[in-house]
Picture 1: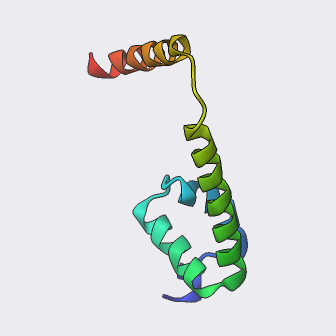
Picture 2: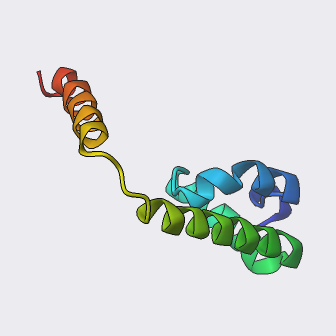
Length: 86
């Protein structure tokens, strides 16, 4: 890849959350990964943010939610899917 085909640290930083959530296009994912593979500072930031996200997910899994809340969220999600299915 040429320098024009690579992301800068700033471009990677702006995309880092979407990268962690896998919301980038395959080409963008590849470009961010390539940068992370070659830039220690960005790789360190990625590792930190990934660990924070993993810890948050872990803690959220341990929270007991009331059944009424689960039912309400399920109904909202089911209703949101209806227009797509019609």
